[in-house]
Structure formats: C-alpha cells, structure tokens
Amino acid sequence: MGKPAALIPVLALLACLAFGLVSGGNFNDDCEATWEPQNCWVYDAGNSLSLALVSNSSGSMIRSKRQFIYGTVSTWIQLVKGNSAGTVTTYYLSSVGDNHDEIDFEFLGNETGQPYTLHTNVYADGVGNKEMQFVPWFDPTDGYHKYTISWTPCMIVWYVDDQPIRVFRNYRESNGVAFPTSRPMYAYSSIWSADDWATQGGRVKTDWTHSPFVANYHGIDLDICECYGGDCIYGCAGAYGQPYCGGLTDEQRWKMQWVQEKYRIYDYCVDYKDGKVPGVECSLPQY
Image (cartoon, rainbow, N blue to C red; front, side, top):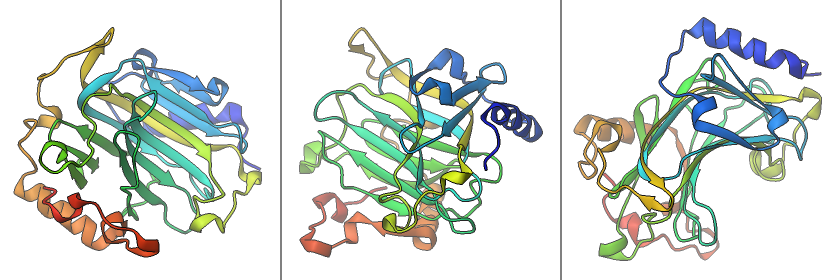
C-alpha cells in the first residue's frame, strides 16, 4: 500500500528543504483549491504544495485567484514516483465558459521504469488538436524541475528548466489560425485519473494499491497582465525577460531544435492518420 496520507505533507516538506528551493510565489496568497480540497496540502509557509490522487474519482485541483490576459507562469514540480500508470498531473492555463482557450502542460504517468509522456496542447475558440509530446531527458520524479508557460500577443512558448521546447505563433490576423487573445485565463494545477487513455493508449491501468499518488509543487511565479472586474491591462511589461514580439534568441532556437529532434515523440503537424490535414500554421515559421 502507499504511504499514509497524513505523512505525505511531512515527507514532501523534507524533500523541499533538502533541495533548498526558493521562489517568490506563494500558494496561500495566489491560489485556491477548487476540487477535492481534502487532497491538497499547502505547507512551508505557503511555498510548497502537494496534490493527491486517492481514487479514480478523487484527485485534486488548485487555481490562481487572479485572471489575466498574457503573462508568464512558472512552477517547480516533482512528479509521482514509481508506478504512476493512468495518472495525469497538470499545469495549465484556461479560460472559463464556452469556446474556451487553454494552454496545456500535462504529464502522463507510466509503469515503473518507463518514461513519463510530456504532453502539450493549445486550445483557441474551443478548438484544440494541436498536440506535441515529448519524453523527458531527465527523471521528472527525482527532485524538482521548472515548467513555464509564456503567453504573449505574438506567441506561446513552453519551457522546461528555462529551456524552450515548443513555440506556437500567433497567425490569427495574417492566416486565420485561431490563437488565444481575448479571454482571461486562470492558472491551474491538478492530478486526476485517466487510465482509459493516459498510459500506452489505455492498455496499462492504474494500480490502486499504490494510492495515494502524490505530485509535489514548489513555488508559483505569476508575471501576468492582471484583469480587474473584467478589465484587463494590455501592454504591460514583456513576459519572461523578453519583449512581447522579440521571439527566441539564436541559442534558444538551437536548444529547442535539439529537444524536438531527440525527444519529441508526437507532432500533430505530421500526423496524417485517419485523413487528418495539418493546419496552415504547420507550414509557417514557429520561432
């Protein structure tokens, strides 16, 4: 059986202290639990968080208290150790309501000894199907790694440990490609069960004798253009230390190409199965 739930916050806290991590964000101040709060623990003066999946219907979710249009959000995550098959740990941005916008980091668990799948996607005007997946080039369960989403008027960039792994550019005006520009988003983190599809296409199911499955977070940094009462601030400072439309540096482009060449395992732009037709953005520069 898994460790008793009461011990999990203590063990996670000891892990955080051992790594000596620091961050400017605070889960108490910046976030609130919106699903199964009994499976969510905030500790270390609000700097650390654990989310637990206890059963196939009882995971956990937190959400930022503030909405924003454009910005950069970062957190440090230690994914579920051991047999994590069927589990999905997430870190993403999403609007609410119909035709929603969403920018995803999802971490699909696997059998012991098999790699996680790092899943990215973007929804605009309610339409997604723009997945790109990677296997990590590190052990995401051994210590904490930094995951960042940068959303600007010109592009979305996904970073792992400050290294860009994917870019999705804004071609809405020039080429009619849907891009999130007007719906305020929240930042979310969650853990939930998806053993009907998450691990090897659903072939490997969750072993609930290992429950609870726990993902640990440390720090949340929100560099955002905040919305107040429906009004959003446009033109605020560039996110992630770069101007809104400055693009990636040559070094960043080289690092991203290296990751994609060696560790990308799925790209919707080259998936022609079942009559799929890649979007026009697939033939346009993404740097």
